[in-house]
Length: 307
Image 1 (tube, helix red, strand yellow):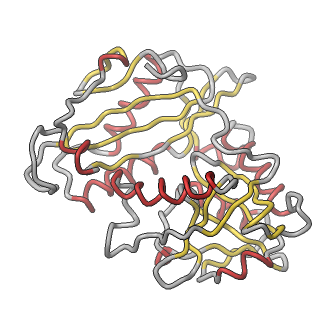
Image 2 (cartoon, rainbow, N blue to C red):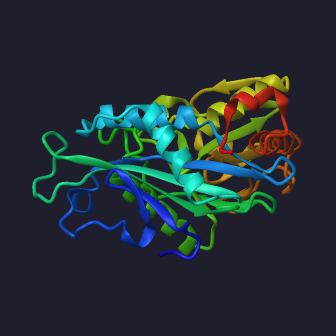
C-alpha cells in the first residue's frame, strides 16, 4: 500500500482493505487504457472540524458523462458515486486534505481493444495530499514538442486513462529539461493546456483562457475560477491564444484539481511579467483557497461536508 494511502478502498462493489484492491495482469483496461477517471479534492477545516469535498456532484456527473462518451458498459448514477465516495471517506475517518480517484474501467479478462461488450467496474481510492505542484513560488514551464491530441482522436471531454500517455510524454520532457510543467499546443498550433491542468493568462487586466475546441479538458476547477473571477469584477474571455502571447502575458496561472491555482513565473525561459505572482492571480488564488476550506459563504454550495 502506498505511504499516503488510506486503509480502505472501494473495489468490486464493497469497501475492502486497500492492499486487497488488486486486479489481474490480464485486466482489459491495464492492457489498453480503456477506463475513465476523476480527480476530486477534499479539504479539512480544522476550525470547523469537517472535511469538505469540492464540487463533488459536478465531478461525479462528469465521470458518468465520460462513460457515455467512451461506451463503458456500466450502469451507475452520479448520486451513487457520491454515496460511495462519502462512505469511503467516513470509513477511513479522513480528517486531513485528501485526493480522491474514482476509476471506471474495463475489468474483464479478455483481449481485443474495444469498449462495447466488455464488462466494466468502478473503484475509488483516497490519498492524503496537500500540494501537487508548488502554488507559492512560481512554476517554470516549457511549450512541449508533443502536441495535445484532438477531440477526433481521443475525446478530450472524457478523462480517459489511455489519453494520459500524451500527458506523461509532455510532463517527462519538461521535467527532464529542468522545468516544472509542460504547456501543450493543439493541432492548429494554439495554446491548449498543461499536462494535467487548464491555463489562464492575464493581459492588460483581462483574463483569457483557451476554449473547449482547443482540445482542453472541460475543467471543473476552471469553471470555478471563471466564476470567481467574474464575481471579483474581472473580465474573462474564452478564445484562441497564440503561443507568443504566453511570453508577453502580464500573468499566467494553471488551475485544476491537482494543481489547484498555481502561478507561472517562466515559459520557455522567458520571465512572465515581473517574475512575481500577479495581483489578479494572487486575489483569485486567495479566494479559491478560502472557498475550498469552507471560509467563503458565497460558495458553500460548492462544498459537500463529510461529517
